Length: 167
Image (cartoon, rainbow, N blue to C red; front, side, top):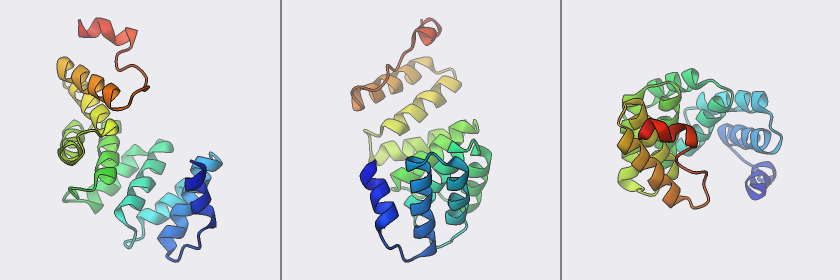
């Protein structure tokens, strides 16, 4: 984490979107300044030259500020065709879709991630939440347990409160 913040704050970024992204990273991760990071994230999303990974991080900053609906609106406008192969962006888009209860998009985008990165912990959690929302409990549990196996030491996939629902 320190190296990410270090590079973000010390590198002489040339493009405006990169400067805004670096500032957003520093504000959010190092200082916990969600509103400040939000201003920078919106600038990144408004810059058509920003790379896809920068857009993904900016969408995450919107989520951190509990603005998933705004993030979903941006996704709908900017990505009429999902950018397959862009796993970081697609995973973030899928998480936004979960936050806005757009289960179909969440499933589609997380599945696209899994097609090229079958060990993606975040995509597996999206699939688990989506399957749970669709009352496909066995598949939801399978996705969660697989996520546990992918990321050793992660919190348990099953909590005591959910065990009774799955039996």
